[in-house]
Amino acid sequence: MCKIKPQPKPITIHFLCSQAASSASLEFPRKQREMQASRARLFKEYKEVQREKTADPDIQLVCDDSNIFKWTALIKGPSETPYEGGVFQLAFAVPEQYALQPPQVRFLTKIFHPNVHFKTGEICLDILKNAWSPAWTLQSVCRAIIALMAHPEPDSPLNCDSGNLLRSGDTRGFQSMARMYTRLAAMPKKG
Image (cartoon, rainbow, N blue to C red; front, side, top):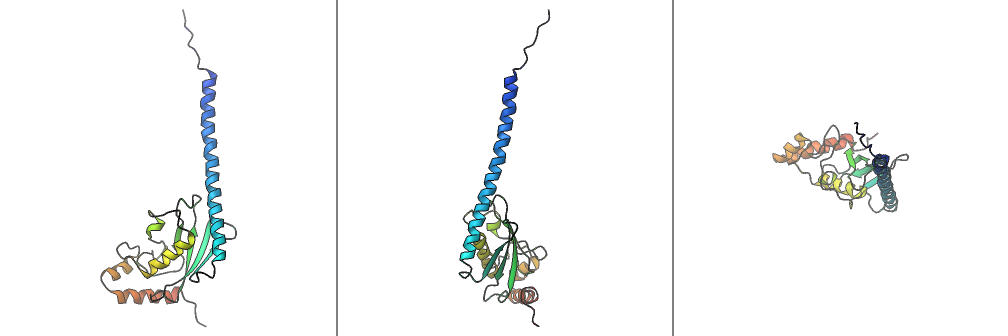
C-alpha cells in the first residue's frame, strides 16, 4: 500500500512569499524616506547659507543647480598662515544618507598641507571620518577645514613631505613651500 505524503499548504508558501515581498517593499520606502530627509536637510542648509552670506565672509558655499547632493565652496586662507590671501576651492559629494553619514570633501585647489593629499585633494580630518555627527553642517565643515589649515596635524599626514618638514621642526621650510603653492594655485594671477 502506498502512502500519500501530505503536500505543504499553499497558504504557507503564499505566506512566505508575501512576507519576503513585504520586507522588500519596506526596504524601498525606507530608502526613499532617508533620501527625502537628506534633501530636506540640505534645503534647510541651503536657505541658511543664503541668509548668512555676509555673516561669514571667509566661506562661499554653493549648491549645484541640478543636484542638491553636489556642492562647492570657496574658502579664504586663514590669516597669519602661509595660506593667507589664497582662495581655495572645495568639492562636496553629499551621500543620500546625509546627515547620518559625512560628506566627502576634497580640495580642488592644490595646497601644500600635511593633512591634504597633494594629488587628489583628499582631506584627513576626523569629522569627515569616524568623528562625524549629524550636528555638523556643510558650513561648519568648511570652518573646521579652515581651522585645520591654521593648525596642521603632522602626525597623521596624507602629504608626507609636508608632514616630515613639520615633524623635523623645519617650520620655515614648510611655510615657504605652503606659501609658494598658495601663490601659484590659490591667488589670482596679476595682469
